[in-house]
Image 1 (tube, rainbow, N blue to C red):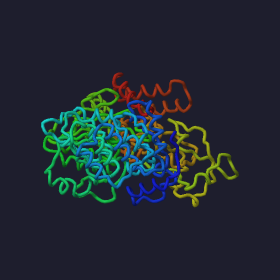
Image 2 (cartoon, one colour):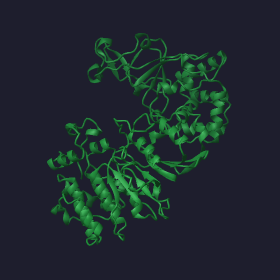
Image 3 (cartoon, rainbow, N blue to C red):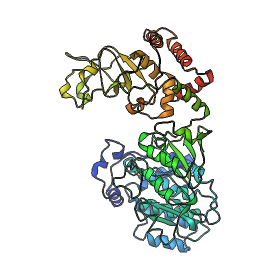
Image 4 (tube, rainbow, N blue to C red):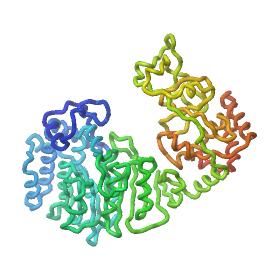
Length: 577
């Protein structure tokens, strides 16, 4: 079993060689970027029974120089596969002549897996190291699905600009290995990728075109390829996620400077006129406002061809992901969107109906629903008042589980439910001068205000008439919408209709003020307002069936059919999963 362990001298030396700017902060566990936890990425195994063999191998390798460990395993696989007399093998041994064969590993059994070298390397890397680099390697299944479709015969070329251990390179069909290229800035990964490609094409005596370099540097695409005059027919990869580059990439239009998006933009520039790229990206690329510029790039440059959302996760990663296929020269009006085994054809024009250009599934039914919702008016929360809850700076010191003299209740986001507040779990002695951040006193003490969860995919608004305090996990809204009471505004915000709107227009896991400001409230008169307010009072008083009555009233207000309402509920319920 692999457990967290002290970093050995050899491991530290190897880490410093690969990442000389990393500080000793990696030795703490304050967050994932500092975690020393190690684990085998089981999703990469073809045969789960090989886990024990890999654990035994890792036990022997722990504390040893990782480059030496992987070099030893490469040599073993070469000799087992009959490469000893090949020119390419001699070239490999010569290139890595400074590395050492580890006697303790020479006779260690190596299980047969698609990418056993990459799996072992991933198992030796600490979680913090992988998070800093974004190095979570793709499974063979996903790589095969992404690139196995391409026919690379007829002298076509392929590039993986951050190839890792080379799983995409190994998953190609009908390819000439002389026309396969890869980049990575990790020298151990480059060594592994070269070995994997030579093993994959064992019948050929060639040396892989895999370079240890930063793909985003200026010389890539100019100086490095000068001798090849190279552009590519297919570029596919799983780029590092989450990192933000400090220096601006020359010629880039990506404002976020997020590494994965910069890789995609630069890869597009290296495609030939008929070229295709296929990138595995975090699902946040599809909807988060930060990446709106990339989505605009995909919609306006070349042709967005297909998006597929995957349900599987990588070990140690909670982020879902999607493959994005993009074509250089074609300019179609639609693209395919696949999720949960269902494929939908999406008109690109519908994406522009979303303020953040969300690349989600908006089909003909969705367009009709959105049109009905907007047809009743476009009032907004623009004249409302907003505030954050209290930021104490030290909750452990300021919050009390038992009420003390001078305390009052304070609510957190966990106590915010639709329409009502649950029982408060904490108390606080209110002293504005001792907190890190506070809002205006009159907002906290407003006789009537709405509070809502900030970190949530579901719109959850509650009414507070007790002038209570809230922590910053609960944001505050004092609404001002024409002809609407506070209770009526809350009714719309908690409705399936608005939940559907929020997912279709933004689909973020945070309830952001900027997004709420764009939600269209209908133009209603005072009679409708009073009716909705009465229905909300029934909910607050616990009358059975009150929420269903409100939902039915709003359905009639928007003139939605039963089928349209079923679609709305299907999308809205997805936020609760």
